[in-house]
Image 1 (cartoon, rainbow over the protein chains, first blue to last red):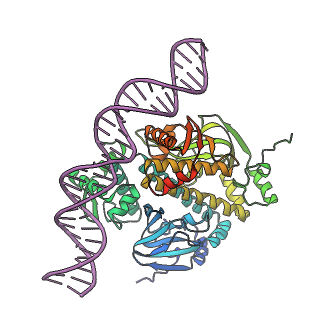
Image 2 (spheres, protein in one colour):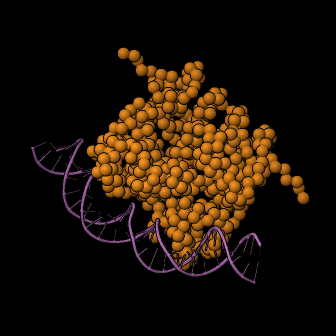
Image 3 (cartoon, chains in turn orange, blue, purple, green):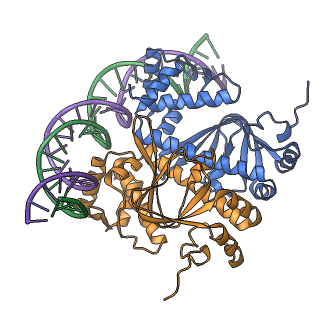
Length: 235
Length: 235
DNA sequence: TTGTATGGTTGACCTGGATCAATCGAACGC
DNA sequence: GCGTTCGATTGATCCAGGTCAACCATACAA
């Protein structure tokens, strides 16, 4: 059995994660930088609002949510992150984190000290450009969520959510038609701007229509085309 | 009368815009880079979805909105931008713009070729870091909008919107209690996930309560504290 | 095995904001 | 000046999704 070195150069997420597009030699320089690896138990947080920002984090395995809280306790989930995705970009602008990153299952992350990432990306053009693309992708993703929250109806939102998850699991080599949700109905609701009861009802509706089979957190997508259709032209 | 040189080094927005924090010598190097300046007439677009991305844009004067369209015509306004703010960050990730940037009044912009910005920021650490902060700030701003769309009620959204504008006008040396809205009720509504009638009604309500005085696009904030209070604990 | 806790489902009812429609007002072209 | 157009306001009505409440399912601890 091969020894699994915990280095970017041997990480099977390198095509999704920060190392994307780097040469072998460049990859090794990135390895030096990604010093700290850490396990985060389910329910624990990777960082919290107000903590000093010093590193961004790449998810090696596991599943996270990020959220923002209002003084009166209202929560908005701003995203769900899976292996190969980066966490912590929100902290760059003020040097303090502006949201909470909470693990939804036992997870493992790589910490990338930000100032070192900046110096390395001053030397490696490819890394610099890729990092900019990752940040930009986050902005575009957020626009998509705004669209969802601002203009879509409940079932459209849930369909969009499921299709997005499906596509991201696919990109990671998992089934794109069958997966376990790591988050509760309430967390899905918070992300989608809906109450948990509404999320639950939408799932039941999809099940009745034969679009999906749901049992608690286990989801099978039975008719992806219908879900897509539903998302586009309110039917 | 002093001649107004159109260069970052003499631009009165330099403390808000990309040049922030640069030394005089660094500023001059940025000047070389910002070659193109362009006027955009009210209603015209600076860029549209699908166009090839090659530069980011700094607003010298004027006012813009960015929006995303769904196939069926639904529009989501993703932001309103004013002098000193950057447009086009959405285009980095795919090298194509993913939203439309439309001018809401006669405006003037500086085009900053992106590949040249990347090379310069490989040389000037301060510029690199500031650019990262600007991108991060955009992500954090988007989280705020998600919070607004996902958890706030109509009047809270409008209050948050007005307070945000107020604070940005203030940062630019304009009155923070009295200003003209450049956008229609429909555009405000699209941004806030509301219909124009609801926006109009919320304005009327605020007026009745004495929080604001509104006449068409002219707004005076009479009781900022009440607006803040309304935003925080649903009253 | 049973008790408890947490999360999910479902039903009945209510309401904030959408929808539909009429009217008003400001800006602009002629 | 006067009509036309576009945006804003306001009223009446409707409904998607919120709220409240009961109940069910699963996981885990005793």
